[in-house]
Image (cartoon, rainbow, N blue to C red):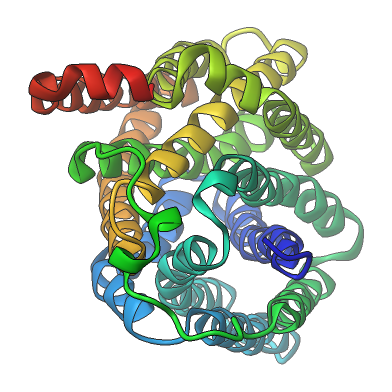
Amino acid sequence: MTSRTRLLLPAAFITSLGNNIQLLGAALLLVRAHGSMLDVGWLFIAVAVPQAALSPYFGRLADRFDRRRLWVGCDAVSAVAALALPIGLALGGPQQPLVYLTNFVLAVIAALFTPASAALIRERVPTDQLRPFNAHYEIALQSGMLLSAAAGGLALQHFGPQPLFTFNACTFALSAVFVAAVGKTGTKKLPEASTPERRLVSGLPLVPLAVLFGQGLVVVTVFNALMPVLVVGEWGRSAGVLGVTDALGGVGFLLAAAVYRRSAQWFGDLRLAVGGFMICSALLALQPLFGVPVLMGLVLLGAFLFGQSRIATRSLLMTSVDESRVGHAFGIANGYGLAATVVVMLIASIVTGHTDTRFGFATLAVISLLSAVAAATAIVHRNRAREPKITALI
């Protein structure tokens, strides 16, 4: 792995930061205007639907075309699309339609970004370096997602929406610069059979791994929709408090990156992935029960455990198929995760709307737990005949 390949890490962080500043800033605007979890839920659903429908198809495209150019193209088009929202607001356009439309367009672009970025990593990073690289990459993504609430909340509170969303467009442009600087491979891509260092290393079934990976997306997305409703809507705290809470989540992910390699050696990626999701489910149910200080502590702990589970799942999914099909695998996983997000978001929105966010968090926790158990059961069942090999692996 070259030093230029490491430029994908800041590019991933900046892209994730920009995507989620846009989404969470828009969610805060809707909460302030309407105060309804259902309004926020529809925003996240508008983002999830096009990605769920297009991700499997775009995953195949990521395996057929230059993955680096696809990533740069996604960032460039996202920068242009992101500018539409502040320009529209400055011109006095209707707020709610602009919010939905802009985030819908960005969601379509993100449906290509996810499989293209995963496929580019598998293409450029040798198999024996995937674990540490995936640790840093996943932390870059998730830290950008969680820290976006801090940046978005504080910026929205002090500067208003136009500067916030303009800054978001700049993050996409900067990410494109980083990825362009990675450069071309310099050699023609070889078939999988002639590159032993890139052969499969897990051999686990794709569908259960896609469920685990997708469930991580469900948890993060619905959690991010519930948090502004809980902190700003129900508890009446400022957007700055929301930002600090989610910033602690970013710290948890950084700690997860620091210990992941040791944890993976102790427990194995599969046990780490399933067990982490199960414990996180319990923490989700507790988070809205005891006020802001306890919420902050549980978010920190939950992000620490979730981060390790997410990294382990990414590594397993990336090595479960040939390098030439990684884009397709991540397209399927992303499509499933976003389709499940739509369903879970609707359920959590309806439950929260008729009760409060405590029951919304509990609903998310139960669904997450059931998904982790179902995926683990399917993996064990389908690989029982190869149990010695799997045991040695994990």
